[in-house]
Amino acid sequence: MNWAVMIPLIIFLLSIFVVGFWSSRYIKSSNNFLQEYFLGSRELGGFILAMTMIATYGSASSFIGGPGVAYTQGLAWVLLAMAQVATGYFVLMILGKKFAIYARKYEAITLIDFLRKRYRSKGVAIFSAISIIIFLFSAMTAQWVGGARLIESLTGLNYTSALFIFAVAVLVYVVIGGFRAVALTDTIQGVVMVGGTLIILIGTIIAGGGISNIMSDLIAENPNLVSPFGHDGSLTPAYVSSFWILVGVGVVALPQVTVRAMSYKSSKAMHRALITGTIVVGFIMLGMHLIGVFARPILPGIEVGDSVMPLITLEVLPPWLAGIVLAAPMAAIMSTVDSLLLLVSSTVVKDVYLNYVKPTASDKQVKRITIGVTTLLGVLVFALALSPPDLLIWLNLFAFGGLEAAFIWPVIMGLYWSRGNKHGALASMVVGVGTYILIHTFSPNVFGVHTVVFPIILSFIAFVAVSLITKDQSISTENQVNA
Image (cartoon, rainbow, N blue to C red; front, side, top):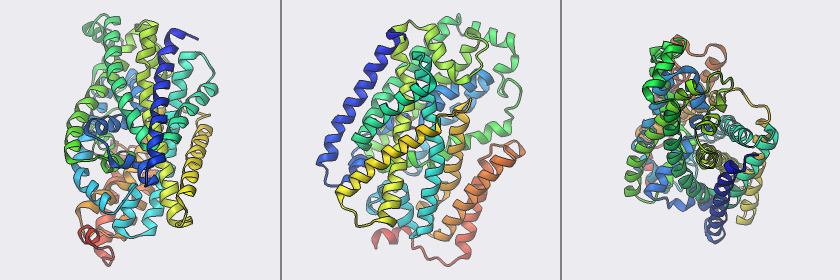
């Protein structure tokens, strides 16, 4: 084991634990356990909001899987990745104030709370819960695989041992600290991600003899590596443009991101987060994916793409600095895992248990159930991650697409179209998820566009058509708020 690399990582993990224990004080003293545990009592400032959104979205796909695919595909994948620059902007501009206002007036703690009270439908709530649990389990599995592979590559431990260490590290601070611990650790992790990206990028460029030399090497190997269509020409214009829906506009519908739009304390904080988040996401996405491409001439022949980032870091940096910098992908992974874990836990506890199993549960029972469910979910994801895929980015993107197909129109149309009703919302979700799974399974990338495009189009048609032809049993959002 390379202790020069490990010691900075251990220090980083210990600092995360300290934040978790500090945050647990707020849970103990709070008069509203659920709001504190799952939303941090809606007290996020602008900088923390920006960093927690970035850290939650900048996941193992961005720091491990993304550079791995960029290593294979070349600069074309950098172009695709830059669609994510718009993520924070779209979320806060489209949801922003309106979503936060309604969430507060509905006293909604989760996205499903909002949907249930907007559409007054048990069916919408239950289908939403099932969708979140299924697709976020896929997303969480991808993150845990990424964390385990990183620890495996640094320590020389076998994959299972590395996965166990990662699982314990995440569960400790999430279980004891809740959303406040997640948001504060996300802030630390976001800062680490920015610094780590800058250092690795500079080190890689120097090791490759400068950008012009690296580009010459790439062209000499395969001119397609510097084209916008991928190393084999498979990234067609239709696919590239449609991919922006998945990782750009469609991110509005991701429950782990929308919950951030509930948790800020003021409009000023939201505006500051919008600017900060857009700048930081742009820098991280550009830097990390360029590193993946630039690593190809330096470390040719890497077979498992997910190992590119740790290998290039260890190659171009001294061990002590590599240890500090490798805290960046670890931070990215942990910051996404903790948010997903908390979101699935809130779905099970708040949206299923308290609404349909035991609405009269006491605060003491709720605390016990919440901690137990969060821990159990971690154990289940650990079991699923024992057999990892070769490239975890595809597992993560599958989960993203499914969630977007389910939630994009019920959320957006629920805010902006008062005529939309529960029948339209449920039809939209069923059509979106059903067509997404069918197309993904039997005919991915129909007509050359990304799998998520047609499900989103069809779910929109279903929402509008069914809402118009059925009796409007859902009252407008304005009337609901005033009721």
